[in-house]
Image (cartoon, rainbow, N blue to C red):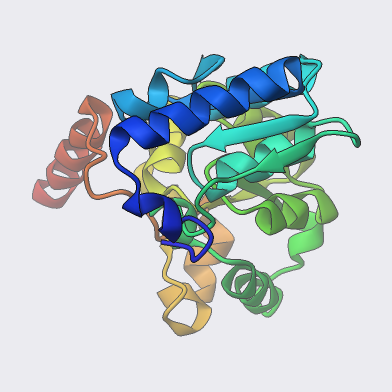
Length: 243
């Protein structure tokens, strides 16, 4: 928990509620509060807009508010700040609020991976970097700098289709499962989707594996994320081993 928010943890619920209502009345239309679906009820009920992070950021940018308070995690407030007008100020109540998925990849490791890939091929000519929106702003910037793009879970397939039109391969981070599931539904063979382990030299891969791969997946995922397609891919892998 950040130092700035600590004094407010000592307030009882009634006092905290009273202060929030007073601030909203004073600021009126100059303030917009965004409540992500994951928030608790006592926070959620104060939100002007509720929903997923990208939708909320767009709604805030389109509002007349001067101040955007994002009740969510760090990358969400960054997205709101990116999409907001220059005269709007984006505020994250707790600067230590993070996302385990977003924390799976950082700029230092991604830049090192890009450099190591250059030992095998020219990434600027052959790889489109794609980051899931659940990532830090500097990783979104990295993708922009290297001709890449940002995706959501909804448009991941469309983004991959676009990416392959730009270059023959994709480096997908930080959500390994989203990249693999999407590639699988596009008909990309499992053995053409390799996992880059940032803790190992050359991602733990051989030059041959990298050259053969269509998608290079970042080793990163939420442990609770297990969709039916995840299970389908696991079954497919097991079937391949049995053949």
